Length: 126
Image (cartoon, rainbow, N blue to C red; front, side, top):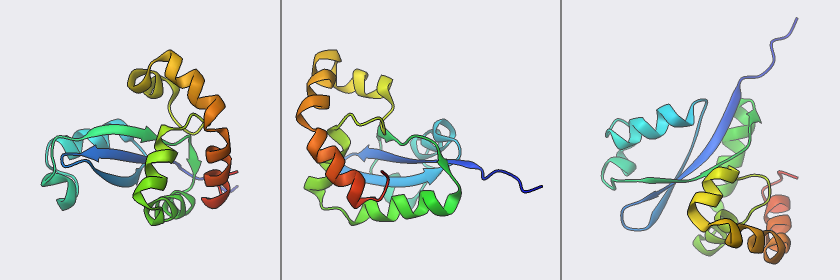
């Protein structure tokens, strides 16, 4: 019997200098702690502290998560900003509430639904 694929997540950190770092992992909490402790990538080590700004929903398999990460990295900064501000079911709802507040989240859902749909299609995550 074939084992189900391992669950992966794509995450985005906002680094010192207002830059993004995107990665994939099976344990976001552990990976962010590694970054904060200087045990993550060289890029992040030189841009501490970091804030977690995005966690994807569960992604079945490392390959699919890596493809999502690669497509996200190809977006322009403006596109990344728009993608990260939307509320389209991809983001961790508690994280969004913490960043934007309840009123902002409700407004984002209405005003950015077109942006969300466009980027979900572009990133092939419909």
